[in-house]
Length: 291
Ligand code: NAD
Image 1 (cartoon, rainbow, N blue to C red):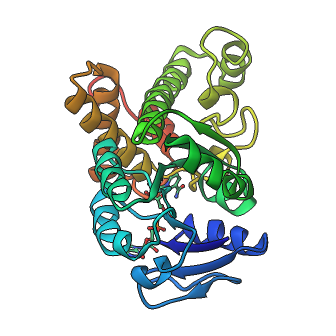
Image 2: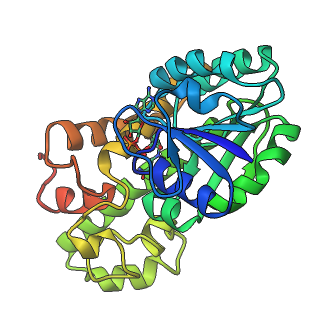
């Protein structure tokens, strides 16, 4: 296939490189970043989109997605598919989908989980919203860039699945970290707490697979001085998108709102920026009930 890839940052560059390595013709554009090996860099998003069978975007946010979509949709040939892999507002995905479909294009919102390691290793999970035909067309590309792609329903549902998942993740990480810090104060060894909780009803991915306590459980960013991993500011972004969606849909999400407030404080007022989102544990560790 001929693929136009727009947004060659931390995630986009390795994803585009994997498509090129698999034998696809990949033409890329980024306002700043260079193209990775195997990808031909062109001078604009419009040029990357012209003549492509599939255009993939991997951009920082919904405002930029809207701007890029306005530029490229008119350049794409009818029947081509626009796939946005960025994490953006559900509403932005649904609005761009309407424009794409009005221009005779297929549309998929396909945000990912798996981070930079998953992008490099081709092991991402894609959560997909859009039509079945477009999904069938793009599935071979998802199989190169990832290990799993789940069609979750119509346009916007990929983004909905992503923010629901990450709202659970943020809330659960905070709960796991505050419990470890409380265990310290109760004189309960972290290893003992892990041994019990990881095989009891408090278990979770954050405890069992990504344990925030250094030296406990499988290797995780906690064992590497909380270098990300998944940075706290990216969790903050996703929790913000979750609350925006909750407000728009009139969903009652008190735990999601509390997690957003805490990560906001951590990133903006404390030392959380640039640290893994599991660095909530040393944050709690140094505090008492009154801060
Ligand atoms: P990034 O900032 O490294 O990459 C974004 C790229 O888009 C940059 O290189 C930037 O120059 C480029 N860009 C900005 N405006 C552009 C435009 N108008 N035209 C072309 N290129 C433009 O970000 P990233 O870490 O690669 O993340 C990309 C998306 O993936 C985000 O929406 C993020 O939330 C999501 N995501 C990231 C991770 C992660 O671990 N990094 C994990 C899951 C999802």
